[in-house]
Length: 247
Image (cartoon, rainbow, N blue to C red; front, side, top):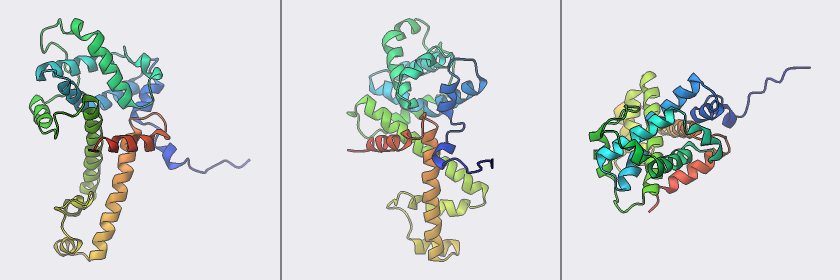
């Protein structure tokens, strides 16, 4: 019988080694891959949790202690046994588990002196507070703010990866001029102006922007794939997160 050499669908290919699927698959046993994957997710998504806690009324230092204490417990895998009982998204699991941590264990954990938690993720207090102060509405509900900051983090991760690729392929100057076209920002230069500055034709710039947008969408889907447990959840997560930017 002839071997089947047909490659898997692109949507399934994303899940060969995505972060959250690795954590879930190894949650019941010691796994260095699972630990590394979970640490990566924690380093990436600490700020949405911090912002949630601050909007809940926690003081800055308490929010930092809570975030560090929570991640310390999470990385000890105490909470991963419950992961199978949550929805498949890391976002949902993380927020629900944080709420339980705050409600049930914070008083006991906080018997330690302030700042006594081991540093699990790098939290720059000044940057965190500056970012939190810039939030557009202090009336935004904590859960909605969490989703909005989660979505914003995803977008930032995708943009950083995109820039890294352009720099690595000696297209840093092109990225500098066309990145504002990605979201059709008002500050974006007309294609003709970009073409003149880069010594390109206007059709070439249009094609560059088209490719930039296509690659950005691809990277964003991959970033989202890192935080869900099945390909079918990607589109649902995209719709949910972009609704967080609604009025």
